Amino acid sequence: MSASLWAQIAQMARRSILQTLRQPAMVIPPIVFPLVLMSINVGGLDAATNIPGFPADSYLDFAIAVPFVQGALFAAINAGSALARDVETGFIKRLAMTPMRRTALLFGHLGGVLVVAFASACIYIAAGFIAGMDFRAGAAGVPALIALAMLIALGFAGIGAYIGLRSGSGEAVQGFFPLLFVLLFLSSMSLPRPLIEQEWFRTIATYNPVSYLLEGVRSFVIYGWDGEALALGFGVAAVMAVGAVTASAAALRTRLIRT
Amino acid sequence: MTQAPANGIEVEGLVREFKNGPRAVDGIDLRVEPGEIYGFLGPNGAGKSTTVLMLTTLLPPTAGTARVAGYDIVREGAAVRGAIGAALQEAALDPLLTGREHMKLQTTLQGVPKAERRPRGDQLIERVGLADAADRKVGGYSGGMKRRLDLALALVHRPRILFLDEPTTGLDPSSRADMWKEVAHLARDEGVTVFLTTQYLEEADVLADRIAIIDHGHIVARGTPEELKAEIGRPTLEITPAEAGERGAVEHVLSRFGSPAPAPPGAAAVRLSGGVEELAGVVRALDAEDVVVSDFQLHAPTLDDVFLAKTGRKLDAGDEEDTGEHAEAVAA
Image (cartoon, rainbow over all chains, first blue to last red; front, side, top):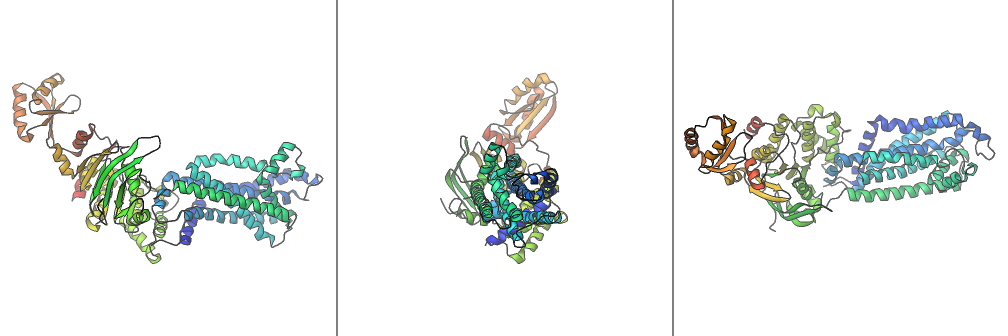
């Protein structure tokens, strides 16, 4: 007899949440660090709103998108580190000895990460409203924004899970973090793409999928319901999520061999 | 291959070859009877853990066949896993979870009915003596506590066959003795078949009903500990002369009583061809040669001698403490 897939996923997700809650270093930075960075940017770059063509009157409305993507980068590290630790400690072999389905391990971990991402997104939104964010999408935009934030987190967590499973090394996962951060900085994080003066930077930002994630999130705040930005944001996030989770599942098949 | 009994293991020509590496396991044959403790003995890198990984379905064999609990390890992996429990070489635990949370996870994943999960987990935690530590994170457990929890987790679904891969490596003598008692209890009182790998000769001697010695992927000896020791047969006499310069004279005398055996520096040893009856003759011969002796030891054959005889070298487990008293405790 074996437990249902849902029971297995629920147990693995519960474990993932407990793991995260018991490591303050995995909870506090994903929430606090993006908000601190945003505060610094809002304080230092507010003059950017005077640039002709800048889409918002307040830099806060422009910059509030960044914590959502930055928090998702932390989700990638959390998911990757947790799976790498399971490989390193041999825990994955213990799981392989049970009738557990592989998908339960992967979706359990990702489910746990999504719970943390949900909480983080709620905190970012609350922080934005407290700081005076002008949220154009209205009440219906809040759950839609959270949905996009979680899809983005799923995409990055899938990438982290893939690296964790392939490498089986927490250090390798941590080593990947700066690369993700570079992707964030080489996007439309600080300025709208049309206003980026350097052509090479603007070109990279245009090809960088992170720009479209940011612009999707940002559109809820600045424009309300911008169909194109939302389609690109949700589309890029969905492609990332599907691709990363598929790759992770393949990596898990290789890592969790059993006859 | 004949059908392995429901609680037994049968292996024929099992091979595992790794990419660009030697054959870690090179065509081994085994038969483990239901309810026995089978000791699988060998030095590091001999192929013990690779064999366990194949028999527990976590590593596909390159060639050969094996049936565990009556199921083929390649074609019926899920059925094998349902019948066995395993505590692999490193206690595979999550340092961030408590002992009780491990139990909850394991009972759920093993499909223990919901109403039985908590009582079963509590019972096993109690049994391995971790009740007081059950709600502490495993990261703070000692090595012995981790091993005991690992064993308890392997038992949640009442397996018929238990694989223990070096369950006492790195444990202090007291924790090792506790583990021996538990393993002995499982086999003797509950009829669980135990496949135990170890690099401790004494562990195999105390616990195992039968033993196989593996070296470089090959089984070089098998039988009960008594049979294997009887194969070596003759006791070894080790003599240290009072004067270091007389070692040659001692060797010369001893050579009349049997074949030379390895001895520590300053001593000479002989495997007595006529058994202990020749002791008096040895003493008389040494006296006749005016050799003064400072130490005189008679060793009955041990598994160490068996290993030496079969592989040409001693088994170095690295930290073989004197665990004689614990052996007696388990035997009692």
